[in-house]
Image 1 (cartoon, rainbow, N blue to C red):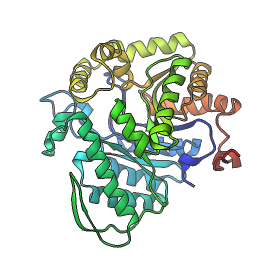
Image 2 (cartoon, rainbow, N blue to C red):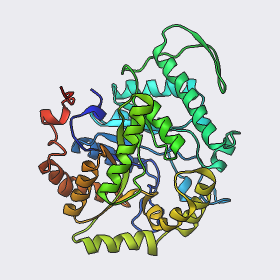
Image 3 (cartoon, rainbow, N blue to C red):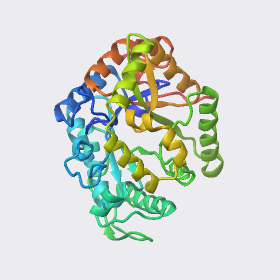
Image 4 (spheres, rainbow, N blue to C red):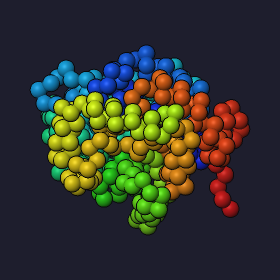
Length: 380
């Protein structure tokens, strides 16, 4: 059984450990890209019973004319995933792929290879578009917004056909021509789980139609508003595509001895030590890249982007963080990807102090118990 199908009500994972993290900060303790850190934290998350470790994909840093900038120091996700898969036992291992940067035949074989290395624990996070300067390096200028998802749907359709078909096939679509298509080996799993983070109306429709896990950008900190956002997403998936979707989000974790300590540290690393050059460049790129939120909302969320690319804030004591995760779960969020400024210390504190509270709340079973690994039983 894939780790993403475990019975835990609230599933958890690491995010962005293949680079310098999600935070755009110059605080001294912020880590740099480091394979040893990736390996340590993935193994620690595996021992703690987390369900996923998800890398991000980036080919160039945010500031123009700064090829050496730390925001561009990111390990390639498939290669990275292969190493993490070989070094872990139970955790689900993702790669992230921008469709315009990779032919589907290559992506299909790479994904199947990592699935074999992981013995069936692989999953794929697919992205239809990204920052124009990165795509331009591939000779793949940014497509019109909705067309990105038409391209992504065809790209993913070719991949799934390559995973499933045992005979050679021809495919002639709007974006791809495949003659005598075939890919071996097949994945270990019947099919590899797909994640997508489309946030615009068109992106959400793509995810609802094609993804197994839909990555939601939570737009409020109030339970009722989050529930309304989640229920609207599920209703759209059900009514338009006849599908039930699993909804995840990503978070920024700042744990302190008191709530005030945690809030002060958030202000320190995302305000006093904000990497303003990187944040300014990132926001300019987002204005050209996305329809997720209007410009005035993006401006108001500047600190949240600096803290961790807009992740939902889990800021406070262990008890406060657990309560906020309980609130997300009550609102219908089924999985949370976690980021920290310092992943080693942050994950250790979270495992020691927050996970037991989530277990007592009934959201997660202790590691190694049958309830932690049993597949959910369908109602009725």
